[in-house]
Amino acid sequence: MAATTKTATLTFNGKTIELPVHSPTVGPDVIDIRKLYAQGDVFTYDPGFTSTAACESAITYIDGDAGELLHRGYPIEQLAEKSHFLEVCYLLLYGELPTAAQIEDFETRVTRHTMVHEQMHNFFRGFRRDAHPMATMVGVVGAMSAFYHDSTDINDPWQREVAAIRMIAKVPTIAAMAYKYSIGQPFIYPRNDLDYASNFLRMCFAVPAEEYEVDPILSRAMDRIMMLHADHEQNASTSTVRLAGSSGANPFACIAAGIACLWGPAHGGANQACLEMLREIGTVDRIPEYIKRAKDKDDPFRLMGFGHRVYKNFDPRAKVMKQSADEVLALLGIENNPTLQVAKELERIALEDDYFVSKKLYPNVDFYSGIILDAMGFPTSMFTPIFALSRTVGWISQWKEMIGDQAQKIGRPRQLYVGETRREYIEVENR
Ligand code: SDX
View 1 (cartoon, rainbow, N blue to C red):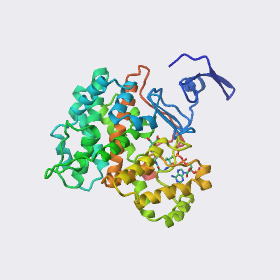
View 2 (tube, protein in one colour; view 1 turned 180 degrees about the horizontal axis):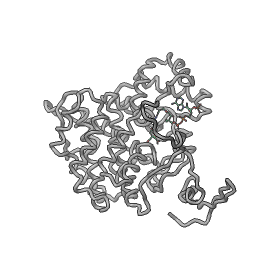
View 3 (cartoon, protein in one colour; view 1 turned 120 degrees about the vertical axis):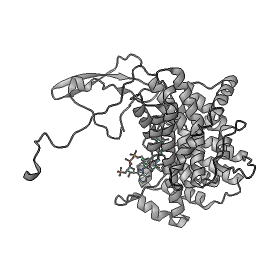
View 4 (tube, rainbow, N blue to C red; view 1 turned 60 degrees about the vertical axis):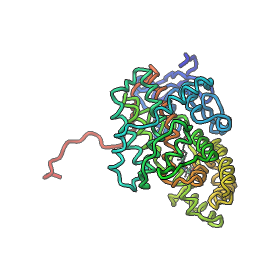
């Protein structure tokens, strides 16, 4: 962190405290409160971290007002159009776009780590067939820490690198295995002659009984969906991975914690909830009923796929996803997909409604993704696992950045305590 000369003055309880202010490359200044408790005997209070920078990072920048998302400075729209997922993985991990030789080496290393230990197959047997694939992924990715714990010295940069490659390579294989297990089909091994997205589609949709040719339209769409979900600054699941990692825990266990957090419907689980909501709405004429419910404070219903903690303008990923949905469905000959029509009309109506406009609620990354995944043949239960396998590179890049930061400490927030003050134990006969 660069030295600073700027300060903020805090005056309260007859005290005046000077706090350092740090300036970012781009974005808001931060007031450094690390010494506030020691100097002022007070905590700050920010339960949802709406105004709190929890770390210093150089990986992803989001400007919520401008609707801008940069990965190592490159706009997501340009990456989605011109790059591919493993190149974005390289960029997130190492900070620069790779040369031709570097990306060839990186893709070879990832490809050759896509198989999982054969004994990993046994972990699936303990799950009910109808277990949600996210439950299976939390369990099996966490179990990977049992296979690599001895070789993961997180203080060794090379071991961190190997863990990152293993994670990026193996999580799609585990996600595909979770899907196959849920439909009672045999696991399909990865193939080294396929690109990353094609490999994942084949592991999901191929069966041993016949050859499977990956449709290049679907492979490109899958790769773009992966790019759009790769990383997103300090979102809830990334913050979970950082906090778990700050104790020195095994990186596979940290990623399992991130998968658990992502599953929630307020976060990555929204893509499944959004398509289920669009199907429940069913037809355009029923949209006003659901808009009314979303605005009703007494109704817990929210428009899934709408709103965002940071974006107070369009989520740039949603724009790219919407274009991709139009392209993919047209290429698949299902442009009149009723769910897509409902989604577009719902977006149009919401964005003309003062409630959504005043609260700056726009479609987010989860609003259109499910329509494409559904058209590709995935059940809704696989939507969040696909988000998880795509976000694995973001989680592991942020984890690597944190572990490599000499200034990092174990995360240990404090609290605003509102419970009982000290009182003496009362024997049961006296209660
Ligand atoms: C992701 O953080 C990230 O970067 C996440 C993510 C990533 O890539 O990692 O971008 C991925 O998680 C996207 C978000 C997916 N979730 C959903 O689509 C679920 C629906 N959205 C909401 O639950 C909500 O918008 C959140 C959780 C996304 C954001 O919630 P905030 O920032 O805590 O905002 P809030 O709940 O305080 O809402 C502000 C106001 C409230 O009204 P008031 O109390 O001010 O009167 O807007 C309302 C909310 O009731 N509101 C909605 C709404 N979202 C917010 N009302 C109706 N429908 C919605 N979807």
